[in-house]
Every structure is written in structure tokens, then in C-alpha cells.
Length: 341
Image (cartoon, rainbow, N blue to C red):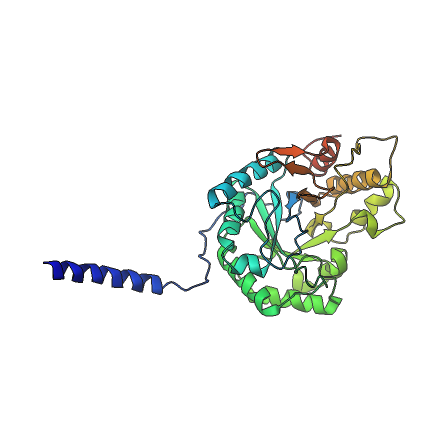
């Protein structure tokens, strides 16, 4: 009887081992289909967003640990903090977050927690933009390693291609590439993932994501979205509100463009409602948000949360989120068409 029991238990053990052995290692499970929270694809006005960044400016060679989180947090603790942060973003009017990815974060064990953050955002009916950031050791505007870059995107695409609220930004600020070489990178990426709809693919402009028109001109990228960045130091000649309306006014394809990064200091006490003392940063925020509102261009502020960044719209003390500048937030909400002015 004892021998028979041992034989039965051994059989169960072998079956269990065979079952586990049949599961490919390192392959991310494909999530079930998730329908889009909105179906507007004629313009980008429904991208009302905030960047949630690593304190190290997202340029890291190891795991990306988003501000407010700790690498040693349990999964439960990670999700509790994530819920607090995302809820504060939503209460402010945001429906989109932009998150960095890199090969270390996606291809190593931290992906379990990181992908849970992404899924939590989509569960809360938010759109998620996933953007590749190069590492700190290079910062030259090129993909660091083509093989790991491809493996990373293979895994991300396999997991989230069926989730219509996840958007794929091939590379953040690809300033190392010439126009032709950047177009080649983009066309190869699109060819590799034919099942991802064009309106969920986001392509940064050349340089520091300013040259969106030259990317938009290429018919190979028709229907893809375009990622545009503009900060005060991009043009020293701009001083007035009218000046700072020009970067967005001059866009050739505003209906396809998302302003995925723009921002000014939020922790220095600036009053962005002040119409009498309009310095450059006040003029910038008013001008940019005026045109985002007027043109219906999506706006993703940099950053919504980044520890130690004076531009951060929020701070997080571990238990609650704090708005750093109410007047700045009002400008952003106006850009999103959440309030009138």
C-alpha cells in the first residue's frame, strides 16, 4: 500500500513537472482583449496626460522605479501606492499616463510589478503610453542595443497588443538619428508588429522630438501618432504668450500630434494666473496650454510626478498626493478642456 501511494504521488509530481516544463521561459502571457475607453481617432484631444517618471529622469541602465515606489515594495504595496497616485491624476482631470520602459525593466523579474502598474491604469480606464528610454551610460539619442531593444518590444507587444488603451512610443527623443535613419528605425518597427493598429503607434519627431512634420510627411507613417516636445530653452527668442503659441500653431499635423512633454517649475511659487507679471515661464505655460486647448492637441505634462523635479505637478509623501501649484494645474486643465477660463 505504501509503495502504491509513493507511485501515485510520484506520478502526480512528474505530471506537474511536465506541465511546468511546457511553459516557455521569459515569454510574457498575452492579456485578454481590452476595449478602448474612447474611440476618437480623428484628433488627439482625448489624451489628457501626465508623465510618471523615475527620479533619475528615466535614463537608467537598470530597473525603472517610478517616483513614489520603492524597489523593495511588495506587489501589494506597489499596487496600493499606484492606486493613490493614479487616482490623484484622474481627480485632476487626467485620463492618460506616459511611462518609460527599458530592456532591464521588461526582460527581468521587475516586469511582474511594472506590468501590473500598466494593467492597473487601464483597469482604471486610463490610456497608457509606453515609451522606450535609453540608458544613463550612453544618452546619445540612439537605441542602446538593437537586440535587447527588439526583445523588449516583442515582450511588451505580445502582452499588451490586445489592450486598446496601451500605446507604443517607439523611442523617446531620438536625437542621435538623421531623418533617414530614424525613418528606417520606425518603418522596421512597424513592419515587425503588423497587428498593432497605426493609431496606437507613436513616433517622436527628429532631434529632441521637435521635428514631427518631417516624420508625418512620410506616407509610410500615415495614421501613426506623432510625439512632440517643447520647453522654454528650445527657443531663447520667445518671450510673450503669443510667441509661445507658435510651436503648436506651426504644426503641420496637429490632429495626429500629442505634446508628450512640456513643463515649467511648479515648486517655486509661480502664479500662472498672473496677467500682470508675465515672465517667460508664465508666458510659456499660457501660450502652450492656450494652443493645446484651441487646436485640440493632446497634452501630456512633464512630469506629473517625479521626485526631486521642480517641474513636478504633484508630490507624494507615501500616503497622499499633493498638488504643487494650483494655478499651474488650472492651466493644464484648460489645455485638456476640463475647465473654461
